[in-house]
Amino acid sequence: MPRLRKIAVAASSLMLATGGLIISTGTAHAAPTCSQSYLPLPDPTCQPGALNSAVTQDTIQDTICVGGYSTSIRPPTSYTNALKVQQIAQYGYSDTNTADYEEDHLIPLSLGGNPRSPQNLWPEPRYQAGGSTSTDKDTVEYKLYRAVCAGTIQLAPAQQAIATDWTTALATVGLE
Image 1 (cartoon, rainbow, N blue to C red):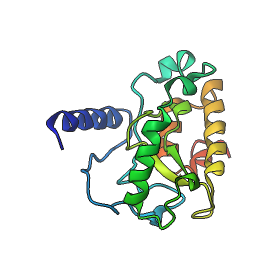
Image 2: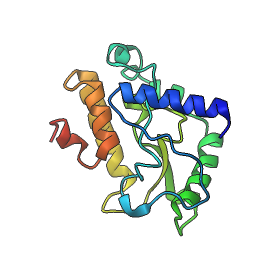
Image 3: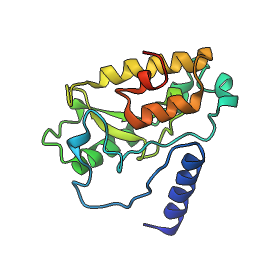
Image 4: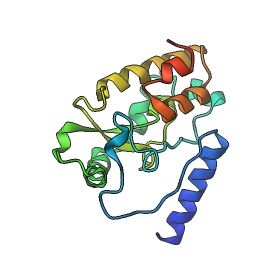
């Protein structure tokens, strides 16, 4: 791993650790390196989540709670499609049709997830896997986003809950 990349990864990990998320930096390996056994969740050693340092509890009314925010920072498909192909191989999915996966942000942009970090992006199956679909996660994301912007819950607990296990995130923060 080039020295500058190691420094960037270490800095990102430090930011996440200070935000309450513990992140492993890991290194690149030959495919497959990520386990499908966690589905419908990503392998936490591959995608533990990563935060956008511009989004804090103090900045939510100027960032995530502004209409169009997520669209304004979403990475281009040229970036996410290339990453999706790489990560499909890392997960060892037998179905390699990229249309069958959403390159999803574990911590969504609407909750202050890092838009470009491979630690926050993963090829989430659109089909039912592990009892859920990508649409189920979208529903959880939206409910958390609405609650954070309404002031019902704080940003950091919402981020932690969805990064830990999106299938239980609503119950974890008291929204179920």
